[in-house]
Amino acid sequence: MSCRFFATGLLLLLLASCATESRLPANLPLPEPSAAALTASFSQLITASYDGREQPLLAQLELSPEKLVVVIMHPSGVRLLSASYDGEKIVTSSLPLPGVPVTPERVLNDIMMAYWPATSWQPLLLPRKQYLVDTKDQRKLLTREGELIYQIDYQGKATDPWYRTLTLHNLRYGYQLQITPLDNAKK
Image (cartoon, rainbow, N blue to C red; front, side, top):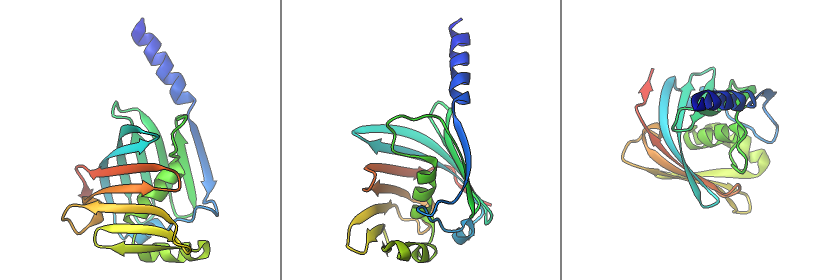
């Protein structure tokens, strides 16, 4: 009986999820997926920290020159959100996550901010009066006035950021993501 109740509750929760398709909002410019110059699949362990809480998550990324697909799951395997971006539109699906400052669109932005080359970001950031500063082990997104928006710290010795653990601090929205690569494979 309790299994049936749990299955019914899970089904209702999944039906309550939202799926949307939208054009890329003007306030969220993203580089083209092809700017990563990569076709690959990546599995990642993400530890999200916000409001004094920590939540481990699993992420699966599929990347091609045509599209970036990101799926975020609870460690139990329940899909919490997904986002697909083809350079023009974003298709998202997510369960209601009250009090969690991360949306599917923001996940796309965070992933791309951490991994896409600075050269693909600069033309999008200049009209917003923002710029990137990259060093060997760190990336910062700043406003022209010097306000720090993002700080991304890369750990490890790998030269390719996809194979390095990173900590992303989103100061504007008050959360931190630690992203650890798992069994990653380039295609």
